Image (cartoon, rainbow, N blue to C red; front, side):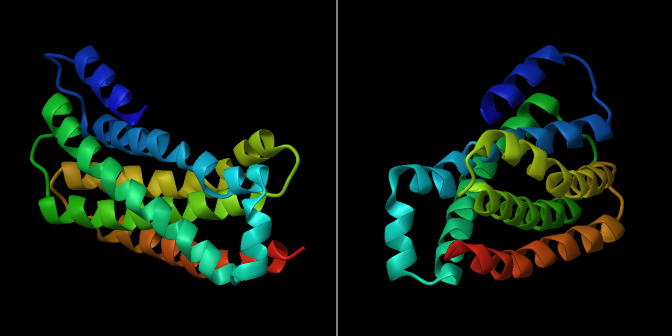
Length: 189
């Protein structure tokens, strides 16, 4: 879905120069679309198929959470390897700060992976997964997406991303450290 998003927007804007804010937003929306499909393959499928019960018996909650985080992180790397070149090819960003863009990608990826793993873990054992996931993911993902888009816009303008990078790193580290701790509280129940 993320590839279709970038290609369709690239063809829609053919011959036009999009401003940096719109390009940054399109990049992060495409990454979010691509990553949102991973939630169904993470915690939710294991709850529906019954393999989560086996994990509860044989694994610690922190190792289960870390495994899901690594799965989401690997998916983010693969997805980024496809999306970033397509984005550069179709949307042609101007004077990009390569270091700033790389740092924003790294901090944004940490935050996105941590947020999606956290949201998937929280709704895995509920009866109304889809509705609860949408309601829970919005307030968790919104601050992260705003900081990622703002910092990426700044990197596309060739300026310093230090302010957005601090916020994004703090948010990502908070979710990365707090997620397993919260997950452990309800995993066994």
